[in-house]
Length: 312
Image (cartoon, rainbow, N blue to C red; front, side, top):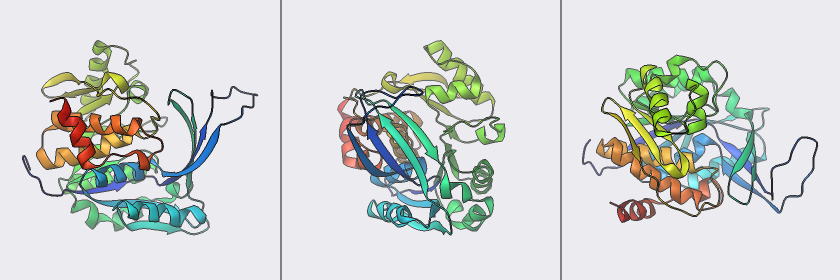
Protein backbone atom coordinates (compact mmCIF):
# COMPACT_ATOMS: atom_id res chain seq x y z
CA UNK A 1 0.00 0.00 0.00
CA UNK A 2 2.96 2.30 -0.40
CA UNK A 3 1.87 5.81 -1.22
CA UNK A 4 -1.79 4.98 -0.63
CA UNK A 5 -3.99 7.71 0.83
CA UNK A 6 -7.06 5.51 1.27
CA UNK A 7 -8.64 5.16 4.68
CA UNK A 8 -7.18 2.02 6.28
CA UNK A 9 -9.24 -0.46 8.30
CA UNK A 10 -7.85 -1.14 11.76
CA UNK A 11 -9.22 -3.49 14.42
CA UNK A 12 -8.25 -2.88 18.04
CA UNK A 13 -8.72 -5.78 20.46
CA UNK A 14 -8.16 -4.61 23.99
CA UNK A 15 -9.22 -2.92 27.18
CA UNK A 16 -11.94 -0.34 27.69
CA UNK A 17 -11.71 1.47 31.04
CA UNK A 18 -12.94 4.43 32.98
CA UNK A 19 -9.93 6.41 34.19
CA UNK A 20 -10.26 8.10 37.58
CA UNK A 21 -7.56 10.79 37.47
CA UNK A 22 -6.17 12.34 40.64
CA UNK A 23 -3.80 15.31 40.41
CA UNK A 24 -1.48 15.47 43.39
CA UNK A 25 1.76 17.16 44.46
CA UNK A 26 3.49 13.80 44.98
CA UNK A 27 2.73 10.09 44.95
CA UNK A 28 1.78 8.69 48.37
CA UNK A 29 4.26 6.50 50.22
CA UNK A 30 3.06 3.38 52.07
CA UNK A 31 1.13 4.29 55.20
CA UNK A 32 0.71 7.95 54.24
CA UNK A 33 -2.28 10.07 53.18
CA UNK A 34 -2.04 13.00 50.79
CA UNK A 35 -4.61 15.51 49.52
CA UNK A 36 -5.24 15.61 45.76
CA UNK A 37 -5.80 18.96 44.05
CA UNK A 38 -8.51 17.71 41.68
CA UNK A 39 -10.26 14.64 40.28
CA UNK A 40 -11.76 13.67 36.88
CA UNK A 41 -13.50 10.71 35.25
CA UNK A 42 -12.08 10.23 31.73
CA UNK A 43 -12.69 7.40 29.26
CA UNK A 44 -9.56 5.29 28.82
CA UNK A 45 -8.09 1.80 28.62
CA UNK A 46 -5.09 1.09 26.40
CA UNK A 47 -7.23 -0.58 23.75
CA UNK A 48 -9.84 2.15 23.63
CA UNK A 49 -7.16 4.87 23.68
CA UNK A 50 -5.39 3.34 20.69
CA UNK A 51 -8.69 3.00 18.87
CA UNK A 52 -9.40 6.71 19.34
CA UNK A 53 -5.86 7.61 18.31
CA UNK A 54 -6.17 5.59 15.09
CA UNK A 55 -9.62 7.00 14.32
CA UNK A 56 -8.48 10.61 14.81
CA UNK A 57 -5.40 9.90 12.70
CA UNK A 58 -7.62 8.89 9.79
CA UNK A 59 -8.49 5.19 10.02
CA UNK A 60 -11.78 3.30 9.94
CA UNK A 61 -11.58 1.63 13.37
CA UNK A 62 -13.45 -1.28 14.95
CA UNK A 63 -13.15 -1.79 18.72
CA UNK A 64 -13.23 -5.38 19.98
CA UNK A 65 -13.74 -5.92 23.70
CA UNK A 66 -16.08 -5.93 26.66
CA UNK A 67 -17.63 -3.43 29.07
CA UNK A 68 -19.64 -4.11 32.22
CA UNK A 69 -23.33 -3.64 32.90
CA UNK A 70 -22.59 -0.81 35.36
CA UNK A 71 -23.07 2.93 34.86
CA UNK A 72 -19.69 3.24 33.15
CA UNK A 73 -20.39 0.67 30.40
CA UNK A 74 -22.73 2.75 28.26
CA UNK A 75 -20.67 5.89 28.76
CA UNK A 76 -17.50 4.15 27.60
CA UNK A 77 -19.06 2.79 24.40
CA UNK A 78 -20.78 6.10 23.73
CA UNK A 79 -17.49 7.96 24.13
CA UNK A 80 -15.83 5.74 21.55
CA UNK A 81 -18.72 6.26 19.12
CA UNK A 82 -18.32 10.02 19.44
CA UNK A 83 -14.73 9.67 18.23
CA UNK A 84 -15.87 7.68 15.20
CA UNK A 85 -14.97 4.21 16.52
CA UNK A 86 -17.30 1.36 15.53
CA UNK A 87 -18.45 -0.35 18.75
CA UNK A 88 -20.64 -3.07 17.22
CA UNK A 89 -18.12 -5.62 18.53
CA UNK A 90 -18.03 -4.25 22.08
CA UNK A 91 -19.95 -6.74 24.21
CA UNK A 92 -21.92 -5.94 27.37
CA UNK A 93 -21.02 -8.29 30.23
CA UNK A 94 -23.82 -9.21 32.68
CA UNK A 95 -23.19 -8.93 36.42
CA UNK A 96 -19.74 -7.43 35.92
CA UNK A 97 -18.16 -4.04 36.44
CA UNK A 98 -16.37 -2.19 33.65
CA UNK A 99 -12.60 -1.88 33.66
CA UNK A 100 -11.25 0.84 35.94
CA UNK A 101 -7.91 2.63 36.23
CA UNK A 102 -6.89 4.88 39.12
CA UNK A 103 -4.30 7.32 37.77
CA UNK A 104 -2.25 9.63 39.97
CA UNK A 105 -0.51 12.55 38.22
CA UNK A 106 2.30 14.62 39.70
CA UNK A 107 3.12 18.23 38.65
CA UNK A 108 5.71 17.01 36.08
CA UNK A 109 3.07 14.96 34.22
CA UNK A 110 4.43 11.59 35.36
CA UNK A 111 1.85 9.02 36.40
CA UNK A 112 1.27 6.05 38.67
CA UNK A 113 -1.57 3.70 37.71
CA UNK A 114 -3.60 0.96 39.42
CA UNK A 115 -5.74 -1.10 37.05
CA UNK A 116 -8.85 -3.22 37.75
CA UNK A 117 -9.59 -5.44 34.73
CA UNK A 118 -13.35 -5.88 35.32
CA UNK A 119 -15.15 -6.87 32.11
CA UNK A 120 -11.85 -6.79 30.19
CA UNK A 121 -10.99 -10.05 31.93
CA UNK A 122 -14.13 -11.64 30.49
CA UNK A 123 -13.07 -11.08 26.86
CA UNK A 124 -12.48 -14.68 25.81
CA UNK A 125 -10.82 -16.45 22.89
CA UNK A 126 -14.34 -17.60 21.93
CA UNK A 127 -15.40 -13.94 21.73
CA UNK A 128 -12.44 -13.26 19.45
CA UNK A 129 -13.35 -16.24 17.28
CA UNK A 130 -16.81 -14.81 16.74
CA UNK A 131 -15.14 -11.57 15.59
CA UNK A 132 -12.99 -13.38 13.03
CA UNK A 133 -14.50 -11.59 10.03
CA UNK A 134 -13.71 -8.07 11.25
CA UNK A 135 -10.17 -9.11 12.24
CA UNK A 136 -9.42 -10.77 8.90
CA UNK A 137 -10.90 -7.94 6.85
CA UNK A 138 -8.68 -5.34 8.53
CA UNK A 139 -5.38 -3.93 7.28
CA UNK A 140 -3.87 -4.12 10.76
CA UNK A 141 -4.74 -5.27 14.27
CA UNK A 142 -3.62 -3.43 17.39
CA UNK A 143 -3.21 -5.41 20.63
CA UNK A 144 -2.17 -4.76 24.23
CA UNK A 145 -2.07 -6.95 27.36
CA UNK A 146 -4.95 -5.63 29.48
CA UNK A 147 -7.15 -8.51 28.27
CA UNK A 148 -6.48 -12.25 28.85
CA UNK A 149 -3.29 -13.49 27.17
CA UNK A 150 -5.09 -16.45 25.60
CA UNK A 151 -7.41 -13.99 23.87
CA UNK A 152 -4.47 -11.95 22.59
CA UNK A 153 -2.91 -15.16 21.24
CA UNK A 154 -6.17 -16.10 19.52
CA UNK A 155 -6.41 -12.70 17.82
CA UNK A 156 -2.79 -12.99 16.67
CA UNK A 157 -3.51 -16.43 15.19
CA UNK A 158 -6.65 -15.24 13.40
CA UNK A 159 -4.91 -12.16 11.99
CA UNK A 160 -1.73 -14.00 10.99
CA UNK A 161 -3.69 -16.70 9.15
CA UNK A 162 -5.15 -13.95 6.94
CA UNK A 163 -1.85 -12.04 6.50
CA UNK A 164 -3.19 -9.12 8.53
CA UNK A 165 -0.43 -7.00 10.08
CA UNK A 166 -0.24 -7.37 13.89
CA UNK A 167 1.06 -4.60 16.17
CA UNK A 168 1.56 -5.45 19.86
CA UNK A 169 1.99 -2.94 22.68
CA UNK A 170 3.14 -5.38 25.42
CA UNK A 171 1.72 -3.54 28.41
CA UNK A 172 1.38 -4.33 31.18
CA UNK A 173 4.06 -7.03 31.02
CA UNK A 174 2.80 -10.10 32.90
CA UNK A 175 4.84 -12.66 34.80
CA UNK A 176 5.89 -15.47 32.50
CA UNK A 177 5.14 -13.72 29.21
CA UNK A 178 4.67 -16.43 26.53
CA UNK A 179 7.21 -15.93 23.75
CA UNK A 180 4.51 -16.78 21.18
CA UNK A 181 3.11 -13.31 21.89
CA UNK A 182 6.27 -11.72 20.56
CA UNK A 183 5.98 -13.25 17.08
CA UNK A 184 4.22 -10.25 15.56
CA UNK A 185 4.89 -7.77 12.77
CA UNK A 186 5.76 -4.98 15.22
CA UNK A 187 6.23 -4.89 18.97
CA UNK A 188 6.34 -1.43 20.57
CA UNK A 189 7.23 -1.54 24.27
CA UNK A 190 8.43 1.45 26.24
CA UNK A 191 11.90 1.28 27.79
CA UNK A 192 10.62 -0.21 31.09
CA UNK A 193 8.59 -2.91 29.32
CA UNK A 194 11.54 -3.74 27.08
CA UNK A 195 13.67 -4.26 30.19
CA UNK A 196 11.00 -6.43 31.82
CA UNK A 197 10.81 -8.70 28.77
CA UNK A 198 14.52 -8.90 27.95
CA UNK A 199 16.24 -8.25 31.28
CA UNK A 200 18.29 -5.50 29.62
CA UNK A 201 18.11 -1.98 31.07
CA UNK A 202 17.56 0.56 28.30
CA UNK A 203 19.68 3.49 29.49
CA UNK A 204 21.93 3.97 26.45
CA UNK A 205 21.99 3.52 22.68
CA UNK A 206 23.98 0.31 23.07
CA UNK A 207 21.49 -1.10 25.59
CA UNK A 208 18.53 -0.12 23.42
CA UNK A 209 20.19 -1.95 20.52
CA UNK A 210 20.78 -5.04 22.67
CA UNK A 211 17.18 -5.08 23.97
CA UNK A 212 15.75 -4.56 20.47
CA UNK A 213 17.94 -7.32 19.03
CA UNK A 214 16.73 -9.64 21.78
CA UNK A 215 13.08 -8.95 20.93
CA UNK A 216 13.86 -9.40 17.22
CA UNK A 217 15.48 -12.76 17.86
CA UNK A 218 12.43 -13.82 19.90
CA UNK A 219 10.29 -13.46 16.80
CA UNK A 220 9.20 -9.85 16.31
CA UNK A 221 9.72 -8.75 12.68
CA UNK A 222 10.13 -5.11 13.74
CA UNK A 223 10.84 -3.56 17.16
CA UNK A 224 10.10 0.02 18.21
CA UNK A 225 11.15 0.86 21.80
CA UNK A 226 9.71 4.20 22.89
CA UNK A 227 12.15 6.23 25.00
CA UNK A 228 10.09 9.28 25.98
CA UNK A 229 11.92 12.53 25.26
CA UNK A 230 14.80 10.60 23.65
CA UNK A 231 12.59 9.34 20.82
CA UNK A 232 11.99 5.79 19.55
CA UNK A 233 14.61 3.13 18.87
CA UNK A 234 13.61 1.18 15.77
CA UNK A 235 15.12 -2.19 14.84
CA UNK A 236 14.49 -4.62 12.00
CA UNK A 237 16.45 -6.48 9.30
CA UNK A 238 18.08 -3.15 8.38
CA UNK A 239 19.59 -2.80 11.86
CA UNK A 240 18.88 -0.25 14.61
CA UNK A 241 18.38 3.52 14.48
CA UNK A 242 17.01 6.23 16.76
CA UNK A 243 14.02 8.22 15.48
CA UNK A 244 14.16 11.50 17.45
CA UNK A 245 11.25 12.77 19.53
CA UNK A 246 9.46 16.07 19.01
CA UNK A 247 9.94 18.67 21.73
CA UNK A 248 6.85 19.35 23.82
CA UNK A 249 5.81 20.73 27.19
CA UNK A 250 4.79 17.61 29.09
CA UNK A 251 1.46 17.89 30.92
CA UNK A 252 0.26 14.28 31.16
CA UNK A 253 2.07 11.21 29.76
CA UNK A 254 -0.83 8.81 30.49
CA UNK A 255 -1.78 8.02 26.89
CA UNK A 256 1.27 9.18 24.94
CA UNK A 257 2.28 5.59 24.14
CA UNK A 258 -1.26 4.78 23.01
CA UNK A 259 -1.32 7.85 20.77
CA UNK A 260 2.00 6.70 19.28
CA UNK A 261 0.76 3.18 18.54
CA UNK A 262 -2.53 4.23 16.99
CA UNK A 263 -1.05 6.89 14.72
CA UNK A 264 1.87 4.67 13.70
CA UNK A 265 -0.56 1.92 12.67
CA UNK A 266 -2.48 4.30 10.44
CA UNK A 267 0.56 5.71 8.64
CA UNK A 268 2.25 2.32 8.27
CA UNK A 269 -0.81 0.72 6.70
CA UNK A 270 -1.20 3.65 4.32
CA UNK A 271 2.39 4.06 3.18
CA UNK A 272 4.36 0.94 4.25
CA UNK A 273 7.24 3.14 5.44
CA UNK A 274 7.94 2.21 9.06
CA UNK A 275 10.62 4.85 9.71
CA UNK A 276 8.22 7.64 8.71
CA UNK A 277 5.38 5.87 10.54
CA UNK A 278 7.46 6.01 13.72
CA UNK A 279 8.10 9.72 13.20
CA UNK A 280 4.38 10.21 12.66
CA UNK A 281 3.70 8.24 15.86
CA UNK A 282 6.28 10.30 17.74
CA UNK A 283 4.43 13.46 16.71
CA UNK A 284 1.13 12.00 17.90
CA UNK A 285 2.71 11.00 21.22
CA UNK A 286 4.14 14.49 21.72
CA UNK A 287 0.73 16.08 21.16
CA UNK A 288 -0.94 13.68 23.62
CA UNK A 289 1.72 14.30 26.29
CA UNK A 290 1.10 18.06 26.03
CA UNK A 291 -2.57 17.68 27.01
CA UNK A 292 -4.58 16.34 29.95
CA UNK A 293 -6.39 13.03 29.86
CA UNK A 294 -6.29 9.95 27.67
CA UNK A 295 -8.72 10.01 24.74
CA UNK A 296 -9.30 13.80 24.89
CA UNK A 297 -5.54 14.35 24.44
CA UNK A 298 -5.29 12.58 21.07
CA UNK A 299 -4.36 14.76 18.12
CA UNK A 300 -6.29 14.94 14.86
CA UNK A 301 -4.70 13.98 11.53
CA UNK A 302 -4.12 17.63 10.65
CA UNK A 303 -2.54 18.39 14.05
CA UNK A 304 -0.21 15.40 13.80
CA UNK A 305 0.78 16.25 10.23
CA UNK A 306 1.39 19.85 11.23
CA UNK A 307 3.97 18.86 13.85
CA UNK A 308 5.38 15.94 11.81
CA UNK A 309 5.98 18.12 8.74
CA UNK A 310 7.44 21.00 10.77
CA UNK A 311 10.72 19.11 11.19
CA UNK A 312 11.27 17.22 7.92
